[in-house]
Length: 115
Length: 113
Image (cartoon, rainbow over all chains, first blue to last red; front, top):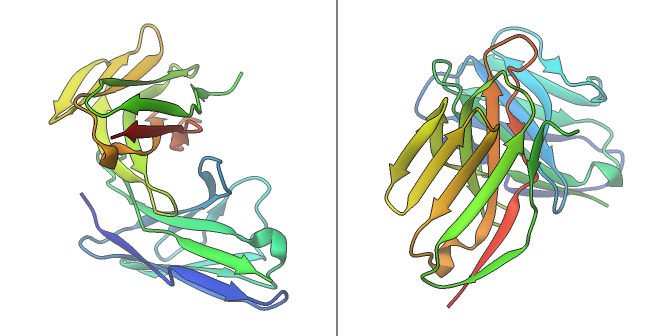
């Protein structure tokens, strides 16, 4: 399967600041990456689909101006949480997809705590 | 009715037991079925992947898909304490409106030594 890394693994920031999370596909070129959010004891919720070289597609209810996604290369997608608030505290996970089979491989996740 | 239903548990079994995890779904367009294992505060790890109906075995894990009943299962034989995790079923279709990977809520499993 594909290997995906995320950085940082845990970040604490103050309310009102912005935080950038990186997602890297280490062993294959990913034209599509996905960003999920997971609250405690809940399942993964898709936030957006990140497409290399084009704008991300956001799910209903996800503010695109608050969660900025950049997929500038085939191996890197970034998620920037702008003007973070305590309610943005969550576990953010990215994934890549094998287009032929729809298998998704996930990164280790980034835990965001906004104080 | 939610698209994917999964009993959240928790499920507690003794070491060595056979574990049965299940999901039901309502969208007949789903064709690809996956099981993920997620340890606490880690990303999900793909365990099993099946296409359409049938069985697939990989070591101690067996995945079953019954599309006629819209029911999928994951069996774990000779369960180990290291199997303690949350197991998520996920599925995706190839038809319009079903391209998004849809997850169950996850079943939390504890294997007691």
